[in-house]
Length: 406
Ligand code: CTP
Image (cartoon, rainbow, N blue to C red; front, top):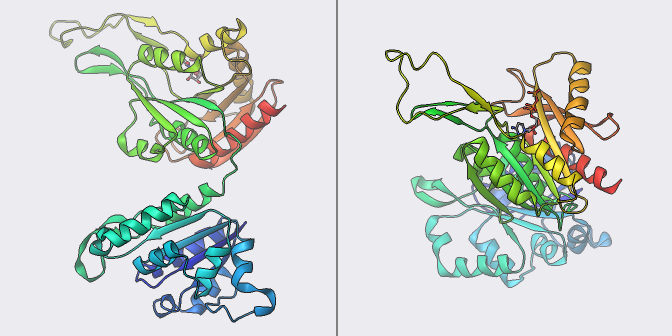
């Protein structure tokens, strides 16, 4: 896709070199449009080398190709990073006396701005009003962050990190193919209390489920995320206006939440690691070796939430066309053995798609990367992905879209 990165004159311009690098690395054609001031911080040769495209600031260059509007017309996305207080004011007023200004007026593509300035300038009523105007017009905002600023000050005004800006930019380029769908996702791992200090649990961090929820929301879905014991740090990625989070602890709580939400969901993805057994009784007192109460814990089976959803659907008690997706983490090292087990599990649970991942030290539980294969209705592998949990989530939704369209 064609991305224009506008750079205005702030010290944070040096961080945008990394932003441009990341966007190019993601396979996009990036044209940098610096203001004259920005070139005092980072020169044109740097931008040209990193973007692999020519850099101009003047509306009088390349007049034959009407460059002053062509860049904006041809862009799929415009990112302004850093956006100084001055640039935000000019954007709000529609001033177009440089190439960045004309590009912004000529574009109908999404616009993402990453402000950077001193805290006082960010807090000034003029800047507040300009930002409000831009946001009301549909401009997307990332940051600024709270932290150290140039000159030793500290406060809100620091430009977001290039990695975060790149991620936000790539999300804006995502297809909106889940618009209108209600989606339920479970994430994390349940904990079944043994006594006031102990529980039966598992190593699931909830990262894969959180990535699945976020990817769905970015592609237009309304998402209910049922989070079982997921850390706040992991939940930070699901801060999104279309994601509602429901916190649960035990398998029974998860079952209740998922079952009630699933009754109005078009797609249910069970990424949570749900305990298969729980202690028959939760002791009100701490079990001890001294009393001999700790050497044996009686277990009872929990409800299989996913299989129950499969049954409801078979009985016609689920929304028409509901798609059910299960997950299975397997330690089997042979890929064909894993697929065979995934096929059996998919049929047993009565679901459309079953994603199987290898659970080992390098992948899956607790890790930031994952590798999955998705088994479909005819037992074949309909999708495979490895990489970040976000990349895996994207492949999973591609498989769901294909399944629903088939
Ligand atoms: N699952 C569930 N309720 C349970 C257990 C599992 O909904 N009580 C869901 C998980 O969220 C996952 C899928 O079922 O999407 C597969 O879970 P897994 O533990 O691999 O399956 P089991 O039925 O426990 O099979 P086995 O232990 O034989 O591998």
